[in-house]
Image 1 (tube, helix red, strand yellow):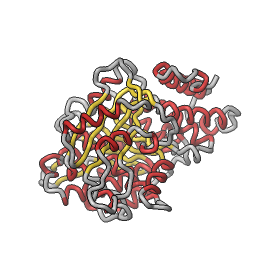
Image 2 (image 1 turned 30 degrees about the vertical axis):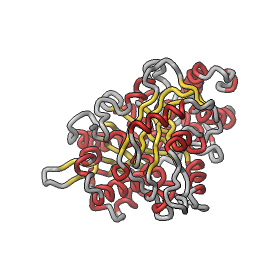
Image 3 (image 1 turned 90 degrees about the horizontal axis):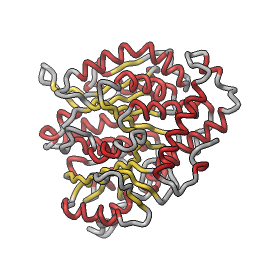
Image 4 (image 1 turned 120 degrees about the vertical axis):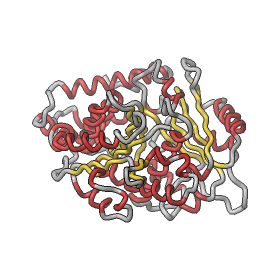
Length: 437
């Protein structure tokens, strides 16, 4: 079992982490088995015998952290759990990396290392934030670079959905932050708000709030943390780690969940295990917007919760592998990893509007997928950047903060090489569909 230090960075990251810790604390209070399996992952015991969360709320603007300090779970946290500035970043990557964020780094480093000292082994640092914002992109990139040699970093990226990536700043922030994730994070898990809204609509919430979205994301994060609780001490996800041997630059993961459906009125008419595992691979059930149905799969990690036998789960996954929509790369022998967890040990927590729906499920599954579908997300970012930033009208807002003139073209070229890696794996798409000339 590996300890996890969770960092919420920027307004979105702090907000999601607030909801996540609310869930972790409730889980600890309500689950009798929690102390046996999960205590050391997210909490450590101090000298007074109290359990303290392993986490930090980091923002260059005090608005988000103030809400946590005024919430019902405030007594679980002390000053060592907050690193807060006063100026904000104005949705500018340069402000987060070179000015406001850099000024905050010494305090953030001290508090993070203090928490790392309470761990029995080198912890995983789980970073949550929106990579289109100034703090979530700039400061998180600075933290990733600083921690790269000391810790395994997993980055949970909230992308701007395709309907909202509309300003030069957001395009630049997203592209630059994605490049840093590729270089300094072991894995990056990608989600976006549009897909979350679509999933919540299918669960019967016609007008979801940010609290609903945060609950959905925190539920997914808790499942990812549950994967760590069941024996992955040497490697967070061994099958996904193996996929990096041949293609170390392809470390972007797509999370999915199944089933996204309302509990049937007739008792015991739940989806079959085969149906659940097939749904995991459908793009409509992932947490990031893609339209590509056919997929070239590099590796996958699946955890099924609830009323499931390990043998039946393996059989169901083998059945899903035979689908015409999915083709598995043949360069690794560990393309699929399958785990089983008890329902109570990985239970999800959504907003009250859908809690009953999910708690009454007798089985469900979560997957992290490393596949060529990510190329569609990266291409979308590159296309928006090319459209909005080629005139260079906004570059002066970055040049005055520490950027060099050549960094813009170098960053775009690096992005093109990332897309080229995916093209090599998915050769049925011509190169010009992946890389802008």
